[in-house]
Length: 250
Ligand code: NAP
Image (cartoon, rainbow, N blue to C red; front, side, top):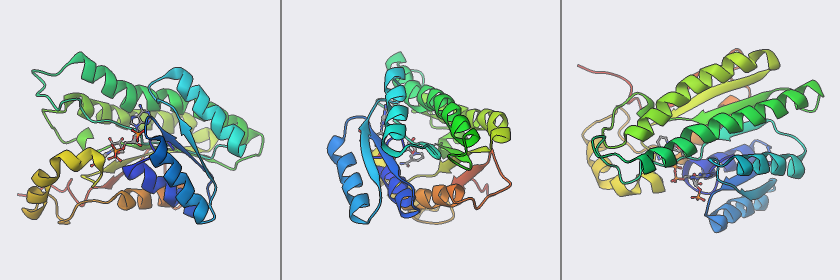
C-alpha cells in the first residue's frame, strides 16, 4: 500500500486490514503517522508493518517489495496510492520542470515500475500456488478527465494512469492478476486542505450531484469491494468515486 500514512491511503490500509489482509503501510516522510496507522490496525487484531520508501526511487521500490515478502511471505494486492499535487499550483504557462519531475516521478513513474516488479512477483507466487490471484489498484483522479490549468502536470499524470491500467490489465489477465483504476473526486484530506473553502462553496452550489465532500472511506470502500472479488469478470475498469461529478448536465 503506497502512501498509507495519511488521507485516502490510511483509510485503504484500515479497510484492507479489516478484510483480513496483512498490510505494509508505506510512507515517504511521515513515520509517526504511518506507525499510528499500524498501531490502530494491530489494536483491532490486524497485521501491519510500516515501511519508508519514495515510490519515485528505484532502490526504494525494490526495498518495499522485499519488505512485503519478508514481513508477510506473499503479495496479493498492490495499491498505487502515493501521490502529490502540482508544486505551487502554477498556471501551465508558468509551470516548472521541477514540479513536472516531482509529480510525474511520484504519480506515474513510481506506480508503473512498482507494478512491473510487483506483477513479476505475483506471477511467481500464483504459479507456485502461494496466492490464488493478484490485484493491482491504481488511485487515479477525476483530474484524469477534468482540466485544471493550474495543475497540468498532475492532470497529465492521472490521465496516463488510465492507459497504464489498461496496459497492465491486458498483459496480466492470463496470469490471473486483475488491474483497476479508482478515480476519486474531491476528497477531504491534507491534499485538499488548502482549497477547502473554494470547494465548500462549489459543492453547496452543486458542482456534483451528491452535495458533500468525498471521504477517504468512500474510496477505501471501492478498493475493498474490488479486492474482495466482487467484480469477478472484470479487469481494466475505472471505478468513479466522485459524487456523480462525471454526469454532464444542460
Ligand atoms: P495526502 O493526504 O497528501 O497523502 C499522500 C500520501 O502519499 C501520504 O501518505 C504520503 O506520505 C504519500 N506520498 C507522497 N509522496 C510519496 C512518495 N514519493 N513515496 C511514497 N509515498 C508518498 O493525499 P490524499 O489526498 O490521500 O491522496 C492520495 C491519492 O489519491 C493520491 O494519488 C492523489 O492524487 C489521489 N487523489 C486525491 C484526491 C483528493 O481530493 N484528496 C482526489 C483524487 C485523487 P507522507 O505522509 O510520508 O508524506
